[in-house]
Image 1 (cartoon, rainbow, N blue to C red):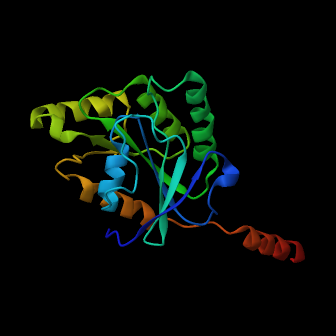
Image 2 (image 1 turned 180 degrees about the vertical axis):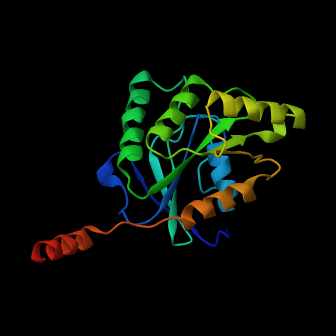
Length: 215
């Protein structure tokens, strides 16, 4: 996949603020300090597309970006950062669940985990959410430059075990520092988008219903 254009579309906290349906979406989710913004910038070949902050937890809305005029990437709020107030953190769960459960053109959620550590309870919970909604199957292990090759292989096995991944699920190690792993992630995204078959629009559904009534 070659990224030719990327544009910020909108930020949302409620369904009515989402952009119109009919365009395939791939979302990114992970803990607040996992390096999600860095990965998105790296994949899209943009330095400041997603805001990278020294203060984890900065992404507090669902942010939509249009890529190549043909699909969207969606930056979901980071989870699990202790300094965020409990009241605010409690808003994120329903906000994300509303998006995950009710977005017909959402094809996949790329879950990010820090390869240096075993997945947290919240990481496991998130992956269970994705499995429930049929959005699982692609995990990116960030900060791969921080461990040795032996540690990397061992830790990838831990990630697979802790998240209870299937043999067909993919775990791709990525280093934003060394810019490695991005081609594999983009290739996986390309495969996901190639299988996209949009459903009928509301007007098309009305036409279909009308035809059925006449038969």
